[in-house]
Length: 307
Image 1 (tube, rainbow, N blue to C red):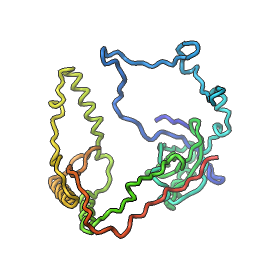
Image 2 (cartoon, rainbow, N blue to C red):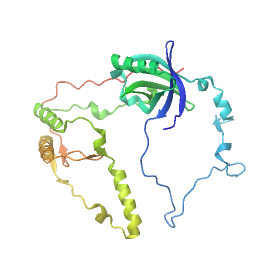
Image 3 (cartoon, rainbow, N blue to C red):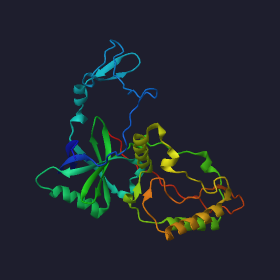
Image 4 (spheres, rainbow, N blue to C red):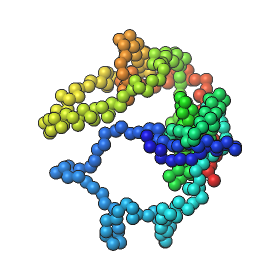
């Protein structure tokens, strides 16, 4: 891995020099656009609308247009901003880890010690582990002020960038205000279904079905060209009871039975689109008893806006 940034975690008078690495990578099959008529590659050019010349990327600057005037901002202009010169990951506060709403998580980075002594790094890591706290930090990276969360993964500190509070949309759906009747029996059967699916999460057991099938399709087209028969390549799938309408209790009961049969037969690698779901549609049962109360909704964690 190649470090994308160097700096230091600063909390109080303690300074922890670190290197920052991207923690994730994309394994999707790379596709490009072509003309469907002759297969010619479609390419995009950066062309100046004034002189008509194709402009190289190194000669392109950023600009802001207020509708009347345009202000050109060079790389030197942007680099002159005080926040861009900072190389500190400034710890603002330590909060209980369960207060950081996962919806705020954005990108994840690994932090490697960048000094001869790793004592301050290990001390911070151990402190976060022992206190079950997450460090909320502010820093600048790639021309943006960012909010982040310092967490522990194994023996490595990770930095997860967080969305600002105003970047998370409010969920307001009138349909959720409808009074819904849930019977005790339905709730019990639903809990039984959840229990039949219960497991410890092991991400290595899952595969990306789309990418696997896309690679299969590409290999088949390379071999057979336009003579490819997709049904022969992938087979045909039949949907069980696709058009039949089941009531909610019957759908729950059949789902539980189906999942139990699957587990007793042994389970293999899970896929991104797998999971035992009833393929039948369900209908409302308006004759059941109303639930005592709606489940409480957890409010998103509060974050401190950047200066």
